[in-house]
Length: 142
Image 1 (cartoon, rainbow, N blue to C red):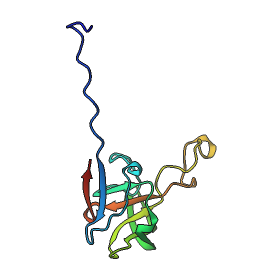
Image 2: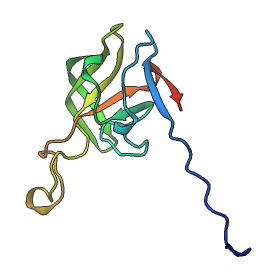
Image 3: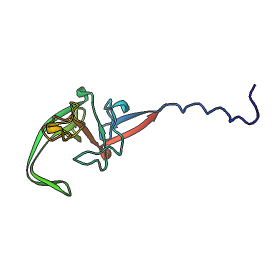
Image 4: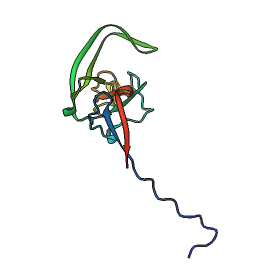
């Protein structure tokens, strides 16, 4: 028997809501899983403004095109470069550019890096699939 001074039992956990990501142009389901979604505050070298980032995608829904820009660009306030390599993510259904693939995800290997000074640029990094929020339509399903 519960005493009157004991706290009430915690409420049941909220039902998990799955998000469905579709192309804003043609409405095709892009089959993006929230399980592979990076948290919004996760730091990336190429930024995260007006985009959502995933660690994996269903490659059958997209076409990938390599892109090399040979001109000055700024990654952060302290770093700039001449050549930027990235891959365009294009919707297979309508051909709209929906995002880019960057190689600035978490390190693909664990360890302390060269000379035990932490990860460095020579450690291969996991690809990050960055989708523009203006190219996606997000709906929730219970």
